[in-house]
Length: 202
Image 1 (cartoon, rainbow, N blue to C red):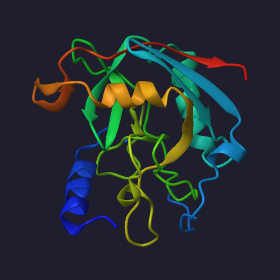
Image 2 (image 1 turned 120 degrees about the horizontal axis):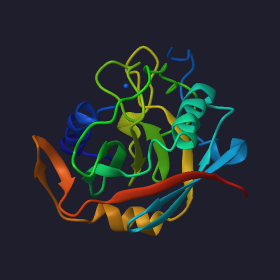
Image 3 (image 1 turned 90 degrees about the horizontal axis):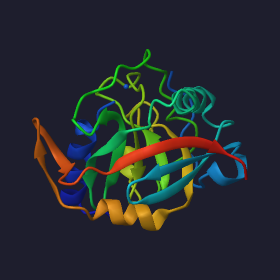
Image 4 (image 1 turned 90 degrees about the vertical axis):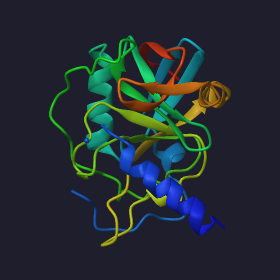
């Protein structure tokens, strides 16, 4: 059980996740990502490869948006700019020089799709506005149930896939030394670069 103090830490961190209609159902206990996955993307990073299955059936808007950024080469050369061990690693929007890339319009929040923020899942980062996600995403380093959608209580963060290969790489990234840079906390001292993001075959 998560202690009340730890829950407060998680909820505080949630507010800082930056990026961006809620569905009318409450998340189910089981994560449906694996059985419904329809696309696979490989992130080649400076610390190793991460392979992700995307769940288009559960999160069609989010997956379409993510794949468009992938196919346009948007993520190539971006970094994991926010890393918190035991929480998540976030990237997909800033260059190694901490310059924010220009994005397309925000998308609708699909956090009510039944998928949960379990270890190894990928979800959209956003601001306090539930429908503000653009290009930034995060990979959960642990089970982060406080980030889940709860009907009429909290909008949650939209999970749209999960890591199938390379969780050891995620673990390594989560352990890197971080600092505050350009007013942003939890930035890796040595940039963790996404060299490329590509759709790959099974």
